[in-house]
Image (tube, rainbow over all chains, first blue to last red):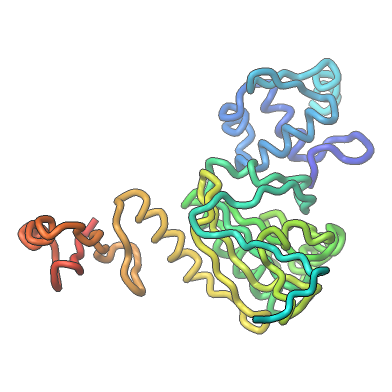
Length: 75
Length: 218
């Protein structure tokens, strides 16, 4: 269950995480909003970052324009 | 002394109290690193192969104790020398045939990187499959316990939970736990290190069989 599928679409946990990043910017807040286990939050955020959907700076996560656009399509 | 073939790579095993070997591995939940578990306890366990009977009963049993482990801030991570596709097919088969969902990820260790780093392969038993190993890794990434079972014997989930309870109690209260200890039972006070401490110990109201074996409730 990777967060981003090979075709660029989001898995359900990927979408959950992307929504959580729209509400919170640090790891603890994202975990709280996603209700996912911490390991899943960390591995998922890494996967979303590699897909260019978010960036991280000083442990603060930001949606990229691509991430925001993808989220708009799903919500 | 046995002759050692120069072509055989001698792997060092993880040792209790040392940092667990780091890894980045493909799993049924995507790529996972050991560091992703920092802050949680982790039970990393291996099984010989997917679609085998003892392993199937173990996976059902691990899934059944997963909620109890989560209450203890413990995550589960399985491993075998099979592909992600095999893992996915097996997990789906377990769900279909046994009505049990496997909620934790499983490492697909086809190149044996993780199994080798953790000494999960015992060539005298099998050089192509991992034995039934359990590594308990604490929130700081330290190996705190290791259990090895042969392929023929399924693991005991009660003992795994008991082990976690003991380790967490030991950390919280700076005590030790006696044989067959269960939560709620008396724990062992560390033995005194000086004669003065030993004499004081028996005055301190502990339940002492002798100065070196004292218990208390927590």
